Image (tube, rainbow, N blue to C red; front, top):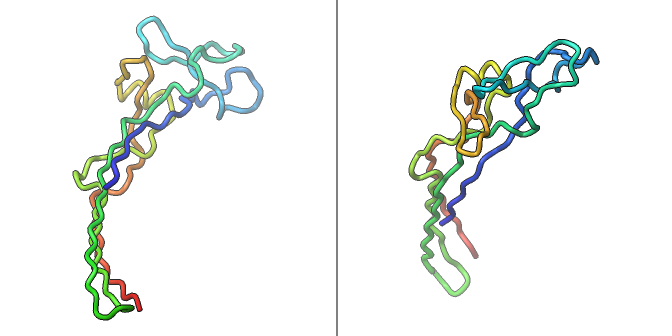
Length: 136
């Protein structure tokens, strides 16, 4: 049995070239007094939002494996295997949109002040697999 949980951090991006370096994919937004993300003024040194200030919702999964061995002879046996992954079928967010417009629209913050965003990918839902293994 295995249980895991955690969060993924990511940079929130403004998508605009604020410092005219011809690169708009690494610029971060600023935070106004209400906690809303905004694009800083043109020709600024960059946004006030720190790196890795976006997070995904927590990941949690319970996996289980059951096996049964049936012996035929001293050297031959059969293993019957049943495995289940994410047994509680919890939605686990794999990635979120890094763009500040999606962060503002999603409008959720963690207690530590970090920002959640719109989920763009998910880990697998509940899965089962069964198998037979012959050892001789």
